[in-house]
Amino acid sequence: MVDPEVVLERIILDIKGVEHSYLGPPESFYKGKEKEPPKDGYLDLLTAFDYGRYLKEATETGSNHGQTTEEAKEKLAAGILPARKVLSNSRADLEERLAALAGVEQAIRAFQASFVYKEGYQELEATIVRAEAALVDVRTGYRHGEYPPEAKEVLERVIAAARELLAAENAVLKERQEMVNRLDQELEKFRDSVIINLKHKTLYPTADTFVRGGEYAGLKLGGLPRLEVKLENENPEMTRFAFLRFDLGGLPPLEKAVLRLYAEYASDLHTRQLSLYDISDLEWPGDHTTWETAPLIGGDLIAGFNVTNKIGVWYEIDVTEAVKRRMEKGEISFRLQVDTSHWGSAVFFTSREGERNPPELSLVLA
Image (cartoon, rainbow, N blue to C red; front, side):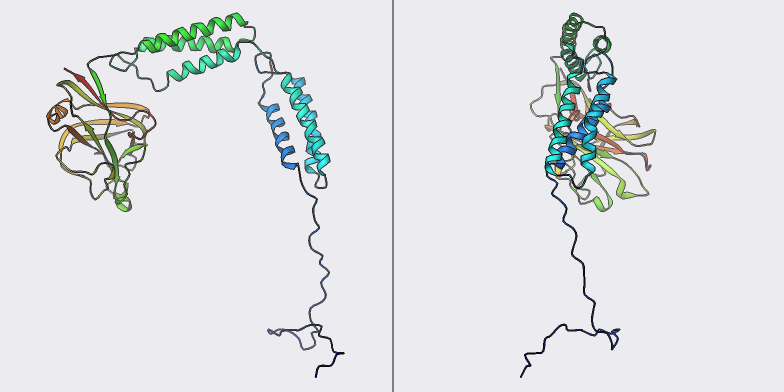
C-alpha cells in the first residue's frame, strides 16, 4: 500500500560519476530568451534607406541631364540619416519605422526633383545605343553578308560625335534633335550597305558536336553551345574532337565553298595547328555521338590551318573540292582536331546551339 503522505520529488539515474551524497541537480532559474518586439516594417525601411544611399553615390554632380548638385546630395544624406538610427534600434516599434520610412521617401523624392532635365537627351542616348548595337559582331569586307569597312568607319565617327554632343552641358534641344536625325540616317545607310550576292548561299549544320576522352568518354555533348577541340597526349581525358554535318541536297553546281568557324575562346598557347577532315564515308550518330562512337581516325585530310589565342575571330577553310565530291551524296561531314599537343591548346568554336555566330558553309553557286 502506498503511503499518501509520500511525495515523489525526483528520480536520479546513476550513469557513473555521481557521488553517494549527491541529492540531484539544483533548481534551474533560466526563464528562456527574452522575447524581442516584432520587426514589422524593418525590411521596407532598410530597402528605402539603401536606395537613398545608392542614389547619393551613383548620381553625378553637374549641369548635364540626370545630374544634380552637391547641396542636393547633402540634403539627401541628412534626410535619410534618422532612418539609420531607427534601423539600429532593436526596440523601435512599427510606428517609428513607418515614420522613418516616410522621411526617407520624402528625401528621395526631393532629391530626384533636383535632377537636371534636358529635353531630347534620352532620345539621343537611345539612338546612340541602337546604332552601337548594329555594329556588334558585324563582319566587314566585300563578300556576301559583309559590310564595307568604310561604311562602318563612317557610322563609328557619327556615333563618336553624338557621344560628344551628349556630354556637352551647353548643348541645346535643336542640336540634339539634329544629331538624332543624322544618326538615324547614317544607321540606315550602313544597314543598306551590306553586300548581297545573289549567287551566294549559306548553309548551317544539321548536326554538330564534340567528344572528350577519359572519364567523359560516355557523354553526349551535342546540345552544348560550343565545339571544343584540344590535344593533350599526357592527359587523354583532356583531348577533344569536333564534328559537323551539312545537308547538300538540291544544290545547283557551285564555284566555291568555305567553312567558317567562330573562335569564342582560345587558351594560352600562342598558336596551334588544326586539321580538318572529310569523314562523309564514316558513320557517326550526329548530336548523340560519344567518344566510343565517334570516327576519331580515318577520313580525307582537307586542310591544316593555324589558330592563335585571339578570341572573337572567324576562321575560314576552303572546302570547295570536298563539297563538290559530296554533292551527289547530298551531305558532307567534317572532323576538326588539334594536332599540337599542349595543355594550353584548347579552342572553343561556337556551335549551332550558340546564341550567335554558328558554323557556316558559305557557297558561291555557279
